[in-house]
View (cartoon, rainbow, N blue to C red):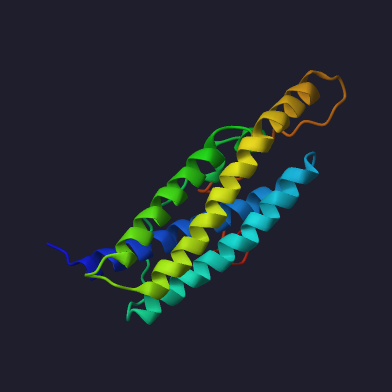
Length: 183
């Protein structure tokens, strides 16, 4: 049976992997959004926050004596080729990802506050990241409906630009974490 400290480290590694995958997805999405400037701007803002969160979580792992060179790959999102670009932000994928991240950071906040793990610094930084994730859900609640309606209107308007491209398949293109470039 794992100790509270071991579980906290495991969950921190999971969160770091989750942030790494979110970064790759957001980089791709930000490069391809053309018709929705507000969504593009929000995606770029969330990408910056995601990079910061990944660094903060990595720092927590290292501060607790963990190794970040072998972070596991268990929180992989659907591959870029598994959804069309047009549906990637008007569908429920963004909501699912945000809810997963909120759940993960709620767990981390509780685990870091636990007397057995007792890590007030990790507790504080995870609370900060949790607030960012909750702000993203608020933004999604306010803008998903209007963006969906705008998309549907474009789709029904002859000559209107609607993005229906498929993102590159994971088999054909791999995004290197942090680089934003396919290899």
